[in-house]
View (cartoon, rainbow, N blue to C red):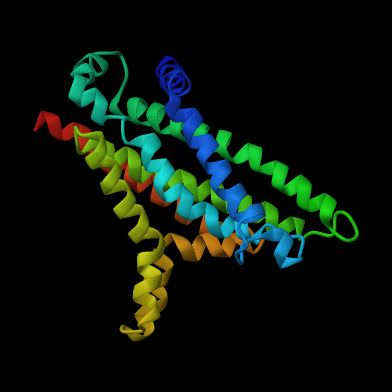
Length: 243
């Protein structure tokens, strides 16, 4: 499995995909946080916090993570190498997990450079270091879980299509709905007492909860269950070739 993981990482980093994802993520967030005169601009806002980053990053991830995962299985199917891969002494779960883990590592590589923003804000505080460090750390953990959840959806979408573009579109649609769709339904208050349950099914409610700096085990279990569910769906999708 480690060999396949290294192969996937090498595939990302030996092509432009991995670097484009990291650079685009940093440039888009950097422009909104430091250049564009919008509500997200830290210098115009006048307060030393990174709330803008954690509001913007999920929507940037909404398009970048599908770009990472769209080729995971789709290209294997299209080129016919999926059959060679399946003959290796690896279980379906090991193959899925190796590809998923490679996507997660790339997400981590994207998040690490944003610590420059944290250091800058730390220095700009009055006095320096006057930050809600707990809230920032919780937001980073929440953003990491959000990215891993999107990656799980992307791996599943790639397993059901042999076309990378179709996989990309499916992932964007599914992640968008799972992130804000349940909040949209909740805002109409159509189902009475069930509305809170509907809101809890969405990713945004748990991501927002973690962004407050309190890591609730319910939120962690939600993300772990979410990832496990889509990994299971991916495994079923792969096993369907035998039906």
